Length: 118
Image (cartoon, rainbow, N blue to C red; front, side, top):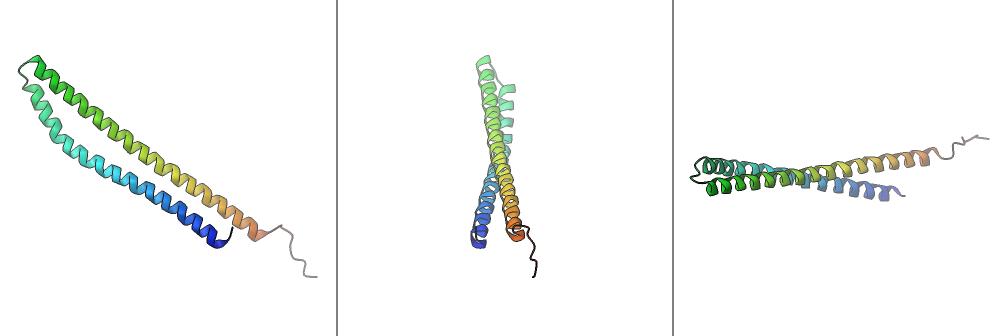
């Protein structure tokens, strides 16, 4: 592999890792915004549940609370999947960089036979 090919491969790995981190940060931002919005929704649902006049209203409020909880759990799962993807790509990038470094060192050192100078 030439120096230009090695540099291009390293750049591609770096861009993939950066893309994964950008996606993770975007998802984190979206989850944060949703949590802030859900705070108001949660307060409304709790008030509706506490002020429910009949069992049907109370049951509907409880169902809405369960749905909100499920939504938040799915957001956490999405966030974790994005984070794990970014970490896996970073580990692969590091492993490939180490392998490239070892190969470059081996090429530099050659066969190990020293020049005799005769």
